[in-house]
Image (cartoon, rainbow, N blue to C red; front, side):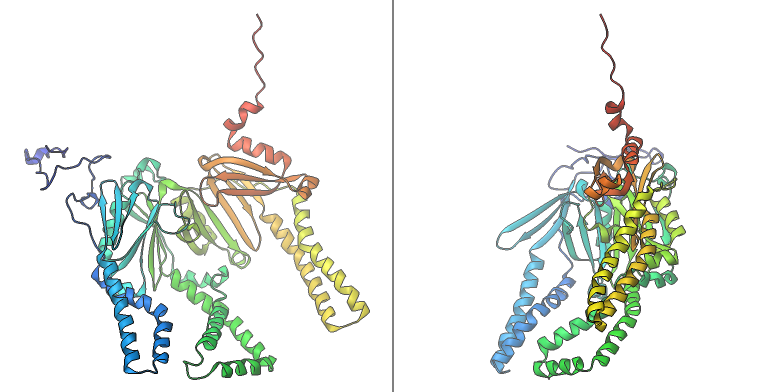
Length: 535
């Protein structure tokens, strides 16, 4: 018995139906026959293994955890031939363990599911339905790139931020083949791609970020603390491995005590680290966001980036419900923003959901409109009492600290209290523009298709969410908000952060905005009841 097959092309005459593979009949496809040749699962194909080249990577990864035991064996054995033998035996055991793990791991695609199996002492089988897959990421760490390998990670949105499955050590060609097969069940009806574009090229580049825009990296604040982290790691390594590195821990402690007794040198060291913050932070930012590209590919948004570790992240367009635009204070002065996608069922959204690194705001507006959809309305201001609340919280606490510091200044006149008093007054003065900026950042709006909320100052965030993504509303009032006559309105969303809030809206806005966005939910409670018919 043969399964369904394609009708023969008329111009070539009749063509016999292909014979079923040996060992069984052909299985029909639930969603119809696949169109690309690479999408078709291969019946009768043996389970696949990772590339044998990965055996050169796993032992190297395990060496750091074995370094301390190996050094201990050599020291306890006095660096004798026997101690070297035990150390060699440990290394050989590590290599053998890696070989066994490689030989007992297989994967294959069976119809509508992916199965990974590991058979050592007990057999473990993990089954992932293809319809649950939310994204497939392909990355190439440095050692993998040297050996011509890649890492493929599968996310189903049900693993709490971790990947559901990982194939660590496939060839780039196999990674792309698997990515195409695993993502082939995208429904065009659920995507945001217009019909004219769907009939066009399967891949289209939305933006390729110019390298000169990587200079905006330090403004984001990302990786700025890298110099201090490196310095702290070096100090910890010195104290932990001082004896093995040729100087004892006593020498390290003596150097630290000498530096502590010379505070000016310590201050110079801290200043050097501060100066290195934008340089090292900008370098790290460039390494992670090198050659950033955002593409439309077969119903998916694909973001590619990275210099040392090249990473490709795919987001199903049909599950994208909006986007979030973020800028810090320094980024706002420079006119640049970052953007993340709001996606249903996405683990690790802060990393996997990134749509754009720091780019000019006008470019971000154009790209998000092209990739997801535009927001065509202005944000509505919040009541003036919201401004008073922000000024109060930004100024009054520091004035209270200044008042408390003024008492010991009047009583003792010590310098330390004078310093505290001056610093508190300066921060209270800076609180005025900060409070005004926080109020100016508040806003919410609705354009008929998407709603938007914005808040924050040091980190300002504007979320744009499709109306269909709203699953509920929450109105919350603290005691202070109740006295001021404002409230916090939160739109419950089945994607992203699960909720986006308009802070300190008036009571009227809190009642009318949900009715405007979701009128069908509230109309049964607002329409007058129909009087019963009279007999």
